[in-house]
Image (cartoon, rainbow, N blue to C red):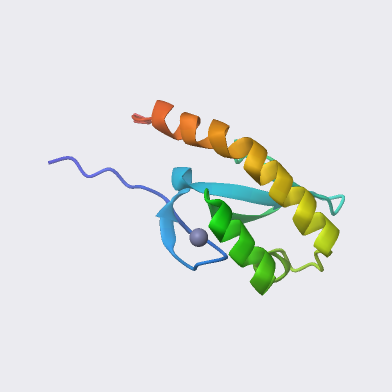
Length: 105
Ligand SMILES: [Zn+2]
């Protein structure tokens, strides 16, 4: 039986280890801006969250992004990110189903 290695990342809100494609990456760019990074390719320090609004809210409440990104995240920024998060959620879920096999051989 073939064992495929799935890279795991930890959700900064609920601390669960999850396959990368189950998580949404929040990135702090070198300019210090925070963005949702759906493709996971932007340069900068990243933090991962489950693709669930509940986890984003948890992160906001516990200021998990502040800790994960080693930066002070203002409430406004959390609010803006939450809006983005909601916007990308559908795309994220759709993309997750599409990339079923990512055999890189
Ligand atoms: Zn989570």
